[in-house]
Length: 276
Image 1: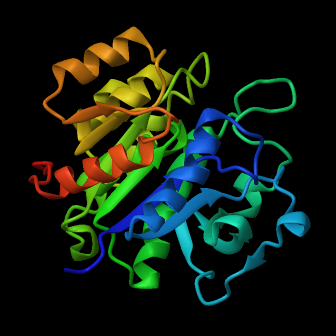
Image 2: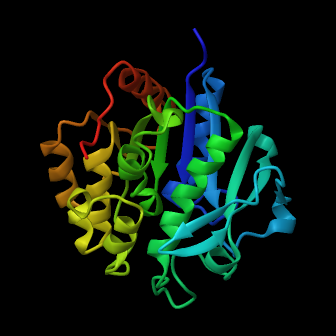
């Protein structure tokens, strides 16, 4: 039996960005899963605050060069890569001058959400998917971490639903505590619709708050991992009322084993399909 292939898509990974619960799990989980015999690939945005020289990022020319159309505008896709030597783990970075050059991540220096986080999220998600296709690597499970990846499940089940590369891929989404107050750009739903995804499928993000984005991810995922104990009560209710299998698994002694077993159980189930 061939090794299961797990694709990790995270908005932040330690040591490239300051340690948070998401960055710590996104650093330790792929390594642990790899050590359990599964094959992994790891993707994250190349935010401008990441020190390229210190972390020895370099561009992968054979993967760069594509253009992605986001909201009717072309944006060049640049792929970079770096390694975490202590983990023997390679990380791919999705880059673009307009979206990721600024020296901040999801919030500016004053703690205010970046006004184009909606487009940055779409670009990141589609950049990951197109790069994985170019690699010729077919993931069995796609595990998403952070609100910047919340739209990936619906993109897999709708935008890419006829793409044989992801025909059998299962999506797992990790739910964490609230990352931000307020909402993303209210035109997000129109930008998703520009990609051919019907508005009825994403109506929950007419007001793109953190909670609503996470509800969207829950709706289209094949499995949910509750990654922190203090998630929003609305999200606990959404998970409980969903028929999507879920587990609670925190950064404890056996969390890697629990999640590895969860992947195995998801792969034995049936994929969720979106009816257009």
